[in-house]
Length: 252
Length: 295
Image (cartoon, rainbow over all chains, first blue to last red; front, side, top):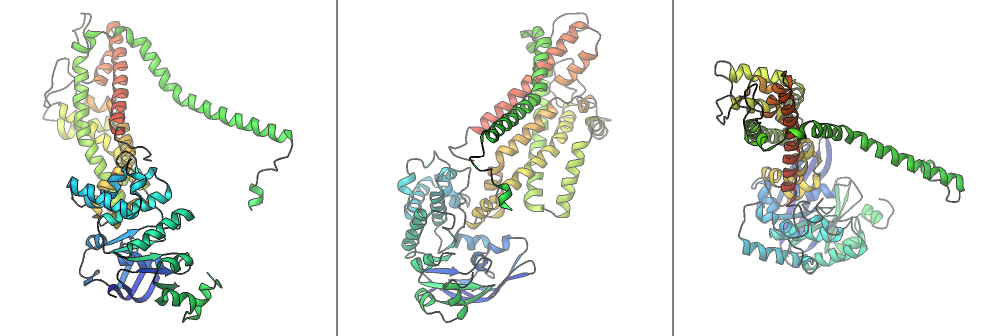
C-alpha cells in the first residue's frame, strides 16, 4: 500500500493561536482516511494545510513538510499547482451561483485556459457520472444554475467539479454535515466508489460515517494528533485513553 | 430568555387576535405609504415635465439645431448627440478606472494603507461640488487650449469614478468567502478567480453602481460650463466646444424668451427619458444571460 501524503512535524497558526502542533502521519494511497475529533480540534485546519488553502487566510501560517507523491508541496510547488493535484470539497456546498451546471463542472479546466469543447463535454459527463449526478441533471446542463439544485445535488455537483480537474487526492471537509440522511448516504456511496481511483481524506463529526467509509482514522484533540490507526482498531480497541473517552461519548 | 420571545398561547382569546390583525394592517399600510412617498417625487417630476414639455416635442426637436433668436422652431439634435459623445467619453474613462479601483480595495489592498487612501479619496471626491470639478478640469485641460468635448467628458468621467469604485467594493465584499474558496480550491490563480468568479458573481450590483454614476453625470451642468462649454452648431470634434442637453436646457431656461422656455422643458423631458431608457437597456442586456435559479 503506497503512501499518498506524508506529513512530518506540521505546525499551523492563526495569528498567535497555535492550531496544529507537530502533526506527523502517512496517508495511504487509494484509501479513505477519516479525521475525527471535537469542534475546534484542528482537523479542518489540517486538511486545509494539505492543499495550501490555510495560507489564503491572511493570518494563517504553516511550518513543517507535506509530501504529496514526490513533491514537497511547501518547498517545491506553487499553491496553484498543488490545488490542481489535490481537490477539495467544502462543508457547505458552494457551486458558482452565476454559472450553469455544465459551466460549474467545466470551471476548473476553463479557468485554467482549457477550451477544447469536445474534451470539455466528455469531462463534464464523466465527472457528473462519477459524482452520481448525471442522470438527475443531464437535461438541464446548460439551462439551470448550479445554485438551483437541492443541497445534496449541489454537494455532488461540487464533487464533480473537483473531479473534473482529475486530482490525485480529494480532501473533504465535513462534506455531508449540511445534508439530510438520504443525501448523506449518497455521498458516502460515492466516497466508497471513488477511493479505488483517488486518495480520500474526509473530516467528519459523525463517527459512524468514519467507520462506514474509511480504512484509517485519525483522532485530533486540541491541535494534536492523538492517535492514528486502522479504523476498526480506533473504534474497538484504541490505544489512548482520550480516544476511548471520545469514541464512547464521555466528552466532546 | 427564550420564554419572553415566545408568542402568546394560541387560545389567548379574540381580543388578542384582533390586536394582531390590526397591527399587521398598520404595518402593511406604513410600508405601502413609504413606497408611495419614495415614488411620488419621481412621478411628480415626470408628470410635470410631460405637461410642460410634451407639447414642444416634434420631429424638428430631434433633427434640427437651435435657431437664432427671433426665429421660431429649431431643436436640440446637436445637444442630444453632444450629450451622447460626452457620456461615452465619461463612461470609457470612469467605468474601467472605477471598477479597477473597487477591485483593488476589495480584493488586494483590503485594509492596507494605499487601499484606505483610495477609499478616503473616493469618499471625498464624491463630495466635491460638481462646479469645483469643472473649474479644476478648466485649469488642468482647458486653460490655454480652449474648451473641448474631451475636457467635458473627462470632468464627467472623474465624477463617475468614486461612485463606481465604492459600489464595486461593496458588491465584491458581499460575495461569500466559500465561493472564492471554491475557485482557489480548484487551483485557479487568485487574479483569475477575482475576475472570473468574484467579479462575475457581483456583476449585477456592479452594473447598478455604473448605472447610478451614469445617470448622475448625465444631468450634470456645472462641470460642463467650463469644459464642454456648449455649442449652437453641429460639432463632433473632440477638440472643439460641444453642445450638451443640460447646458442647452440651462441656457434656454435662463433666457427671456417663451419659445426657448418651452424648448428647455422639452429638453428636460428628453434628457430624463434618455436616462431611463439607457439604464433600462443596460439592465435588460446584462440580465439576458442570467440562468434559471441563479441567485
